[in-house]
Length: 273
Length: 355
Image (tube, rainbow over all chains, first blue to last red; front, side):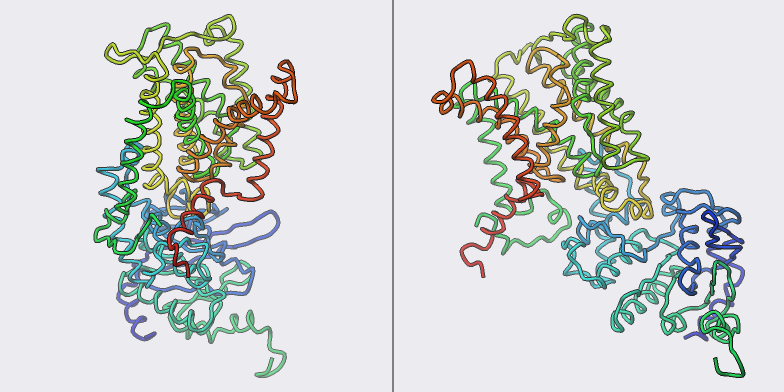
């Protein structure tokens, strides 16, 4: 699988969905991200790994517009989005999920997905208040799109359940569904498998691969499970203390001495650590 | 018992998303409508119609407040003042320019919406208690302004008398006639709110309430939607104020003091935040409460108190019972009367075979 995706990437080389140009972010005296660059080819799955506090989520926050980088630029589909608001960035086609699930807990699964369609819908206040007519027609059309995602993620029986009552793994899945409802061309996933058991991880990995291959969505994910990362990623980027210490295919990264040092510490003598 | 869902299959999204998906619920609504339009005005005494009229007005204002507080999660202690903005706008237009109600009513609503957006601006930066204080300041500033600017308040007593509303020469001059006038606007407000909260805008409001960060990430401009919630909510409040003005025949800032803001908050808390039906329950409850207390005290209290003491006792008792009930509801059923109603309904849903 890795071989084929490397091939796929070769075809599309130079055609990047997302380019992050040497961004830095500091909070007071703490440097969260320093001079990190990132190239995400169209259609790739790129994983960002690194120890806790390496700046992975901060980097994601800069891409999705929550943080404004102190220096550097974020370019999405050739357009500079560095200074744009998160809601505008979403409308351009970047969706994301959160490390600590951020669902609308008072709403049903279906309404959460429908909210994902928000930027694709138009009904204003008057149309909404009148409802019968334009708003209803629009709601029905977008309901169909949400039902497709419900089918895809096998959430049929949970449609009308409030998300607050769902189990952890299911909430993660609903959050993925809400991100998909935005119809993104770039999907940012912050630890989509955090806190899951092996079965749930495998399910989620399958969904991510399907999203990538069937829907052609470019994926950037943060994940701690190395097995999953090495299996599904086309490219891996390693952050440590705010800096990018390695980037490349999973094989390259695994052999990289800087990565081994960051994860395992410095070898004292010979092979053993 | 009354809500048999079995055997009802929905085959279209429209059917599934209908306000009343069950046939029995539809027929119930038709029956309720018939009762209120035909039977009530025929058989109910003028005095009780006047109470119903007050409830209709309260429903409009409380629905507006619930859109803001219950659905969008922003608090306002300034709604009494927004009502007065609507009331004085309409009264001035009606008296000075002799405009009919179908112009003064939306005008009052729009002016209140404008002021509401200005008072709601702090919500862009602050939440919760801080926002409560900011809107409280709005309430006091508006109260003071209306009371001290004769150009708005009409000079002496800060009150403006208006004629009863009329349509095509038909004057709504009795409680029986005002009943239809107010019923129309109450129903309009209920339908508008039901539609609003189930559509794109209403979902976005709830998203801002539940998870503002996630709302932003899926493309909801939370600043715009917070202000929109303030605008819509104050529009309802403004209309509510105009209706009060036509009901009493006078716009008077004393009808819209801070206690009114608190009353309306009590309505939606006791009724149920984020629920249209709960709002209606709450409006009925809070409107009836002082009336029931008065009737009760007039019957029972006369055994213990002299007529002179009675007025004091009633007003004191009203405040006491009012405060006690809010505390009671917050502790026992934080989700309000609507939750009680849902519990009753879900009990009878499978009754008598509730295994």
